[in-house]
Length: 197
Image (cartoon, rainbow, N blue to C red; front, side, top):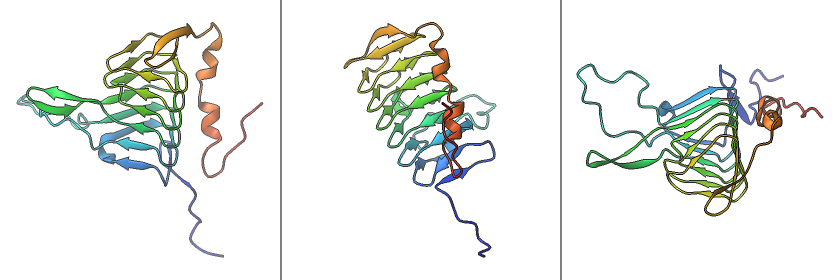
């Protein structure tokens, strides 16, 4: 019997994050994962796109203040999605600002996200484009193929679709449990469990 363990498809961190060995994480020192997050193969997170303008305060910046992408707990990044911090000209030079995801955020296959903030319990479908500096509040469902324009603010409990995106409905009462991703987290990894029926 071999002393070396067979490597699985996913690397599991101390906080329970499961990252595919085929995921593309650039600038890992600027990416913060909250815990129990799943990052599938070919998902790309651009942590190298950080702020270039330095603070001018005499005390200096606190460690960890240069985080490019912050991801909450129980998030699920599907195959081929891309998280990219939004950028703009600030004080005469181009810089990137942080991208923040809340807890229980699902991002579908082939989706590109450049939002400023995504709240908790958000479901983003496949092949969605989320424009720069858009803000998505809590309990939002964005349907497949939607294009969210830059700077759009999507209110809580909204269902969004279209090109460009517009609110087409609202999340029904009692429909909030569908946003929980704890069970989906258990189905991924080197020892997956089937989803309960």
